[in-house]
Image (cartoon, rainbow, N blue to C red; front, side):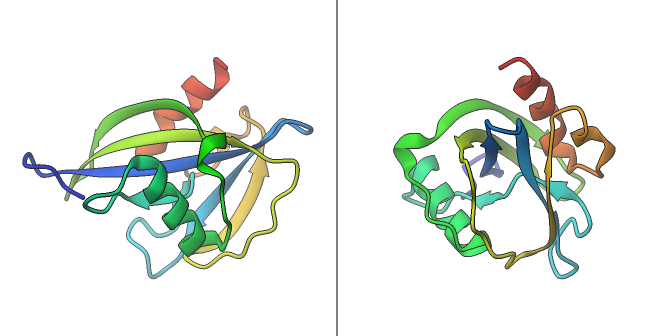
Length: 136
């Protein structure tokens, strides 16, 4: 969804395994915009959806995972200007002990600790979230 300023509203999820202190990041597939960049999975908020509804739909579409929206913990949000679009992105944390998922839009995934995350080619809009996650 884009508001009247042309900003696209986007949601993302940081799946977190508290046992090994690692987050799930996924690499965008070759057919996707930003191909090759690693990201927290998620996507655009459609007209009439709440952030949580959009995240539940996007994670089902991208990973085949059903999430319980009441378990989402809002972390942070910010605006990011890409060359061809301006997005307002919201990150939610979701604790999991294990996660059975299928890569649909992504071609790779990795469970990484917060200090390893910046060694990946992280999508520009997701970079500020790493600092926020270090603080919690």
